[in-house]
Image (cartoon, rainbow, N blue to C red; front, top):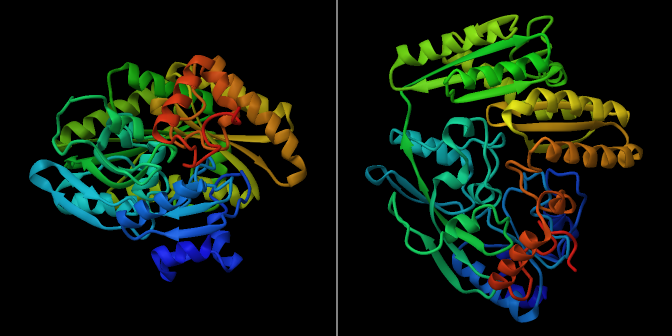
Amino acid sequence: MLADLTALLGARKVRGADPDDLAPFARDESHCGAFPPAAVVLAESRADVEATLRFASERRIPVTPCGARTGKAGGSLPIRGGIALSLERMDRIIAVEPGDGMMVVEPGVITGRVMEEAERVGLFYPPDPNSWESCTIGGNVAANAGGPRALKYGVTGDYVLGLEAVLADGEVIRTGRRTLKGVAGYDLTALLVGSEGTLAVVTEITLRLVPLPKAVRAALCIFPDATAAARAVAQVLAAGILPRTLELLDDQAIAAADSRGPFRFPLGAGAAILAETDGDDPESVMAALVRLGEIAVEAGALDVLVAQGESQRRELWATRRQVSLALKALYPRKVSEDIVVPRSKIPQAIERFKAIGREHGLQVATYGHAGDGNLHTNVLFREEEERPAVDACLEALMRETLALGGTITGEHGVGLAKRAFLPWEQGPVLIDLQRRLKATFDPLGILNPGKIFPEDR
């Protein structure tokens, strides 16, 4: 296979003779293990993707698309071997059209570059996954990634106007449009967004941009415990305030962030909410933040610290974005989940998650996008021998999430890590319908096989 791929694409685009070249493509940021591919294709153009998929289709070779491999659900792991199709080199910003409010990019563009390029022309790309400095926009599309600003602005799919993609047999399709409105035909763009590379390989993305808010203000609300903080979130939203972000950190997350981030939390902080408001009128933005702080105090906040200037605001966010790495520094092993529960159930969820952790002899840290109910629940452990307890804890967390009316994933995707849990949320009729859709797009089943759905029947 290697010789034929090299003859087809050229030596600079194919790896596989040296196991060290395959190792980086065997893992992602999940806990799912290592699965080396037989070969890696480093695509540089749509033509390379077409050629690779035609080659694989003729030989029935599995193909796993991948980008920066920062995913936490095992979505880009080549679990059936075959070809890892990397899109990292497809990293051009093709067009920025301020007048039309859009940008056209290749899938390998780092998400942070999309944000920066939009702001350079006075526009705004709101989706902001925590790994925005390293993850690719193609990976965001594959998982329909979110982030802290999803509370007010929505997730990746809300900003994808159209896609160019290559089907499993090498045929190119274009979905969606390059206009801000349009409802012709089925919404195949929405179907491909979040499909985790199981239906087609995206090679070009048309993104919607919005006006850049002129003012942003941030505050950190300190609480005695996570339950009080979660109740405050519900009360803020019930008061009719729609902040840009409402991020919650429990005691474990605060302890970890304190050990690493630039901001130091005050003594006695058992939980915190990082809130932001934004808009075009600075006075209104500040007034909304003040009202939010008042509600937090009424709900039991010990203190409300308003960021004084952009530098302090960035400090707060740098600390928040360090939480995952800081937890990993304290606990060599952890599993990060991204469940979602109804906002009214957040206090109950946090209490139950900690109790489930104790029942299994493990620590559970919870933080994340409380404003839309998307919680990053981290199971923390030190030794691989604890893995059976960790697996049992994860199952209990998923069942509790569903019992509360929630969902097993809010932004990481199902991938490999959570495919066994999908039938707990979706019935057999719905799963079978999705399998049939997969078979229509990919009749041979070569695209990212083994993901999303339970083990093939």
